[in-house]
Image (tube, rainbow, N blue to C red; front, side):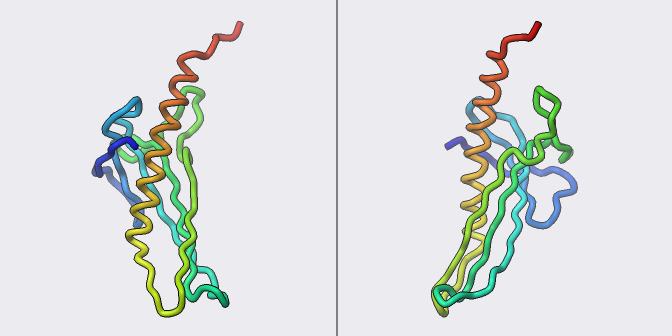
Length: 127
């Protein structure tokens, strides 16, 4: 998995975090992870249910969404969810779960960006 470090960019909203990918083909790319949480009603099997959603965007150092080679905005390059449940009386550490989700998402984005770049480099010009 590629390594990444937190970076400071302006105007991050609550539960938005910026990271710079440190190595691999995507080294130097800045990504913004946005986490949202939705609570679901308890069921007979679980006392607490929450769904975390992580959306990754590729941004610059001013928090502006970047575009890919085709001119499409890279505001949702990866989206995933994670469902958290507990048994009666147990708590969930949402911060730990969100951190793991963000880490997994950034690793996936770095891999996808590397593949995207290699495909774009091999594209045959039309005409």
